Image (cartoon, rainbow, N blue to C red; front, side):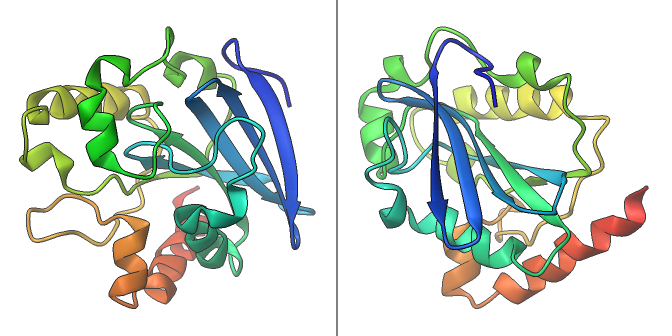
Length: 190
């Protein structure tokens, strides 16, 4: 793997998964969770990176990445994770408190043009409907969706507000197997 922005590439092995990510200080630009023999990717769009950044010392604590490994384990795909915002924190409130630092100098979306994704799975939650920064969040969602408008979308399970559910919600509501089914159905997209 090569850096897509000006960060450093890290990798770590967790069971059968090789995990790669690009970090630059408190920012994580992208993360790939990959298994041998699986070459196709689903682009997974989250809200902001959690505990994985830098050298990966917190990788095993990252619940969302663990949930994604569980969802993708019984599929023909690997998740390639990007975020609406690159500032890495486990608490969205910390991101909101440091909103001026939400992104590093460049956004990763342009850099993904050379890669082919089988589908895109949006799972950024419901932050666009509440709080002081909801208009900024809506603008970013529109921007990201425009970058990947040519990639088939896996219709994720929705919150009452019609926003895509976050993986933590999949786990709490016992929906992980349903999401695995939705990911497997994208095989028919091409």
